[in-house]
Figure 1: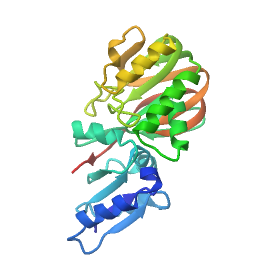
Figure 2: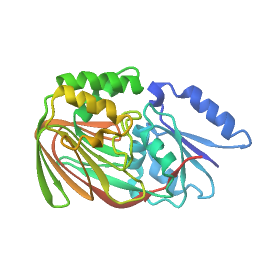
Figure 3: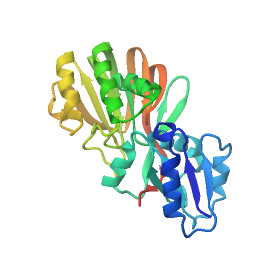
Figure 4: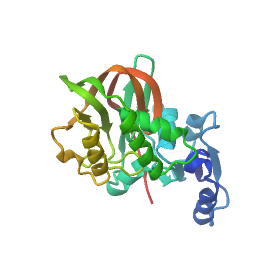
Amino acid sequence: MPLIIYNPKSRNGKPEKKIRTFIRKEMKDVENYKVIDITTEKDLLSLLKSHPKEDPVYLLGGDGTLNHFINQTFELHPLDYPITLVPLGSGNDFYRTLKKDPTKTQSIYEVKTPQEKRYFINGMGMGIDGEIVRHVNASPTKNRFTYFFETIKALVRYQPQTVKVTLDDTPYTFEKTYLVVASNGQYFGSGMRISPDASLSDDALDVIIVHSISRLKILMIFLSIYIGKHLAFKKHVFHTQAAKITIQQSKPGVLQTDGETWPDQTTLTVQKTAKKTAFHIK
């Protein structure tokens, strides 16, 4: 029996039409199928453990849905069967990379803070990125225009700070830092190509740090992110790869993992786990 997992909060909280279209198209020749709400299902782990590997599993949602799924089912991976990802979110940024780089498996990463541990699959960010996502998530409408306008407003009000970053045991200090991002996928913010060199096939995370820059110039860099040309601003955009990353901000800020936010964070460590998942697209 095919299993359909969806998030009712996807697509600005109105996914019903898209879900009906999907079911009508994909399940037209199927007698029985099961539909699961990921936000209310209490034992998704057991459900997937007992699911016959020859029956398809569909995950309908965006990056936030992916994040919920990975965190709820982490101990179960790697799965014996692939999961078909159907883009139903406001961002769908992991889907964008997977479409360009259709790997059979994808690594799962962890962010560890003094309070908790969280897993992600697309990317994480600290600084202005977390502030932008926090405001986008609070908006009644989420799309690329929402991200654009919230970014413009954040560029005006955000106060950059000193950030200490350790990349594979090599320490760095960045003054007047706006952004620290570690990416597995190429996109964030509903289509911004923040890490154009990132690949789902490698084990390292692409690290982007924007620092030591005026507000006017950072606006220019922001506009270039959509086409992945911001790496040319080498004086202000630090770019490398690392397997393990430690971030320490001078003041608490908002952490985001796959578009899910965690406020009041100061110190955290990011690294790859031993787990892999197996998303694919039709």
